Length: 156
Ligand SMILES: [Zn+2]
Image 1 (cartoon, rainbow, N blue to C red):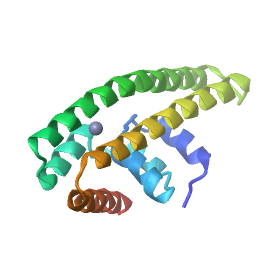
Image 2 (image 1 turned 90 degrees about the horizontal axis):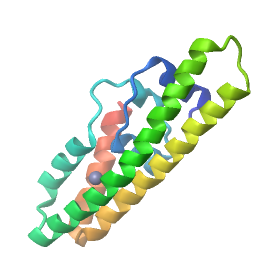
Image 3 (image 1 turned 90 degrees about the vertical axis):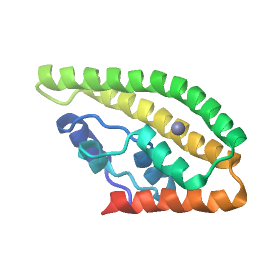
Image 4 (image 1 turned 45 degrees about the horizontal axis):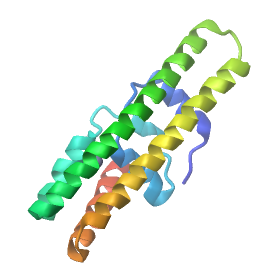
């Protein structure tokens, strides 16, 4: 199920700005664009996601090191994308405040936001695959199950 883009824009305007890896994982796994996630107050943080996941995986020391290295790389990349998203969001917000009709500036601001979101999704899904790469086959089962389980929680 893919929601129309207009939902996203509304949520962006009226809801607090919340990004979670889970949200992105949902989009990746099911093609679900759950715009409602933006206004969920109890969304998991990236750290929550990891803590809960790692508690289930029983990582070796070597795996833990690899995960941490991966995390640092991902965090850097994410910071950059998050500032782009925040900037695009601010831009849109001030346009919504100042403009009296839909126009090209609003159009461009929305597109800038979505481009940044696209980058964020790609980076997050890549991050998921890279994490999975570090795991043994049985751990991968746990990993896949956890991701699916988390998605179901979000779907309810
Ligand atoms: Zn991570």
